[in-house]
Image (cartoon, rainbow, N blue to C red; front, side):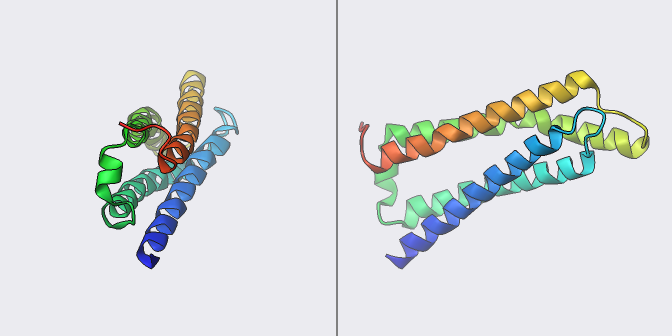
Length: 151
């Protein structure tokens, strides 16, 4: 019982921290194309990526060693939907990550360099899409936990 509770807590803490870091990216981007702190943005994005790995690992541990067991998750279409959403968000995050790394390199090479407006707008849009898709995952978790959709 304690193992399940601790695994759930660790998983939730990782999820909330990951979402906080993505929200941090959104907040940093609000400064505008000319005022973006690309160093802080790149660090937040690196943290977001690292926490995504922790979320996957803690979720795998929870599925394997939690009270419900792997068979509960393996046969749940809602679980597969959750994983699909998570993977989709991960794939979408590649675009802003590449931009942030490119911006950081350009800023380090030339401190007067400015983020192009069109790239800034695209990064904001992708981060917002990620946030909206991530918001669907808890809904899927609630549906799954209550067994509302079964195979």
